[in-house]
Image (cartoon, helix red, strand yellow):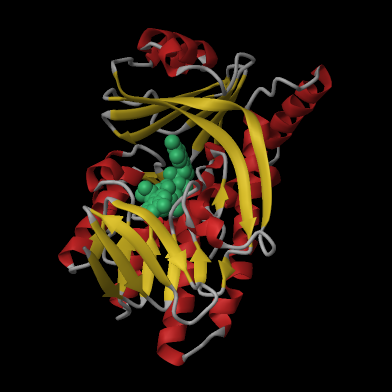
Amino acid sequence: MSETLKTQVAIIGGGPAGLLLSQILHLAGIDSVIVERQSRDYVMARIRAGVLEQGLVDMLTAAGVGERAAAEGLPHHGVQLAFEGEMHRIDLSGLTGGKQVLVYGQTEVTRDLYAARDAMGGVILDEAADVTPYDIETDTPYLTFTRHGTDYRLDCQFVAACDGYHGVGRRTIPERVQRIFEKVYPFGWLGVLSRTPPVHEEIIYANHSRGFALCSLRNPQLSRYYIQVPVDTPLDAWPDDRFWEELKRRLPAEAAATLVTGPSIEKSIAPLRSFVAEPLSHGRLFLAGDAAHIVPPTGAKGLNLAASDVNYLSEALIGYYRNGDEAALTGYSERALNRIWKAERFSWWMTKLMHQFPEDSEFDRRIQRAEFDFLIGSPAYQAAMAENYVGLPY
Ligand SMILES: Cc1cc2nc3c(=O)[nH]c(=O)nc-3n(C[C@H](O)[C@H](O)[C@H](O)COP(=O)(O)OP(=O)(O)OC[C@H]3O[C@@H](n4cnc5c(N)ncnc54)[C@H](O)[C@@H]3O)c2cc1C
């Protein structure tokens, strides 16, 4: 069996970038269809980011999906940085004229976006296999895919590849026009989600000689903890008891003393990498979010960068459909990359500052310590950090 569908913008990927783009385009009267490889249950169950910049919160609000984030999200006005057990607060709001971040899980953002798309009759075709874009260098691109035994062709005017790091969109851009910039870190993050009260009301980033640790949270009863581990560590080498013991050793004493442990309800290891593919567009295909770039999660920028791409791309598409404006579409890549590289720099900087790098010499460690001491002693340096952490303007 085969079927042909038609839309204005075909969106590959039903993660936060694809869903938000579809929602914004819908509100502007532009038709889109999302084609997603996984089942909806799988997408909804993924545990990922949890710190939202104001820019993303504003986008959710403008897209009519910010109500639950506003009601249930936890505004954070500061973060805690620790080095070998000494804890220092960075006053995000005080240093940025009142800005803040909102702790609200990516899982919840995704749930809110699915609910909104469903309520407005949005078309999301999940469990789509072998999604392939064709004719992206023409005005009549299309996708093909197979779903539940039927072969589909989706005719469109534009393809938005919001299909994450392992997606098909980026690979459709010819090698002759694409440049890849990449840095792979020699460690990963072992993450545990537990139904326990968070150890601290603010997020703690800790650099310890045994490795980095992060205490984060999703809500007052749900905690997310991470420790730096060698990238080849098998997950089953980390039963819960070992994880909690190692986390405690890396935390400042006051935090370790009040840590409430419990069974993990999710446990995974994420490798750390910095990655950018340039340009973000070719012909009528546009990349957005993890499809185009990856940051190590130390600066909490992955999801937020996906949102700023969607902001620029939706503006460009709306400009095209309202006024026939091609310039914004042509300029999308450069505009988005300008902000992407700044977030890449910040995420790399925070990763360098807070982790133990196996290849580092004693000299490198002294420089890292000096950088930390300078940061906690310098309001100007702290202000630069805070400005980046709360999110650079769009
Ligand atoms: C394990 C993990 C932990 C993370 N933790 C954090 C964190 O703590 N803080 C932070 O800021 N960021 C974190 N991130 C990054 C953040 O989650 C991403 O930046 C964010 O999900 C980007 O959204 P996206 O929509 O661009 O991509 P994704 O969320 O990856 O969505 C892409 C979608 O495309 C679909 N897809 C892929 N290939 C195809 C195909 N061929 N056909 C159709 N559909 C396809 C995928 O199934 C997926 O649903 C984490 C990422 C991972 C993987």
